[in-house]
Image (cartoon, rainbow over all chains, first blue to last red; front, side, top):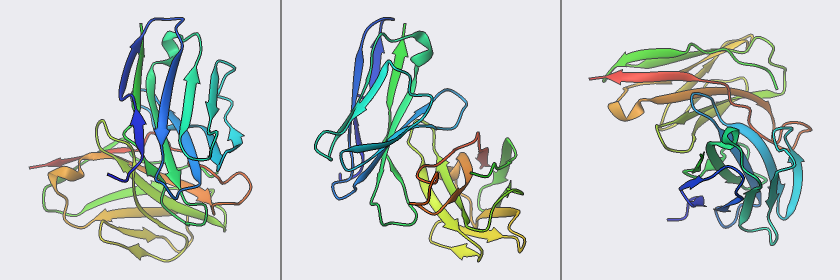
Length: 114
Length: 114
């Protein structure tokens, strides 16, 4: 399968713990995006990378959130000191910079904070 | 990005055409109309996009009014697998300032009925 891959698919953690999600984009895609989706809502933009550079961050990305893409390939999203409000689906997407249209999404990583 | 307005939910009989409307009265001249859908527990999937002209691909047709203030996504022969949330998104061309991500609303929940 050559689509966008996310790991883990499900994560249950206790409040205050740190969690990390990984995204492997489609190999030739140089843009990588993170979105968050809560129940009943559409996905909300968090941040995006062009190669290894983080070019834009949403105000939703609080200080407890950090995203990296060190070699311009896979990316990680870490949430420190998780809160119950962090419970959501975290979606990763990628695209080739020159394409006009399609953003390819992964299946998401569902976080439940108890 | 311009805001969009979509009905919360719609039903469609299997085999019939599904017509999903979207209002985007504040769209500017260089903004595209994108449609994505999200099947339960999956990441969003690109369907189609257009600027001024009507567009058709293997999944759907996109009809944009002459004044560009509204559009309709048409699934010509809806199947049960088309049951999903459909998002209408308006954004500038990739690479333009402030146009490097997608802003999803709450979309239209389409239910295809056997």
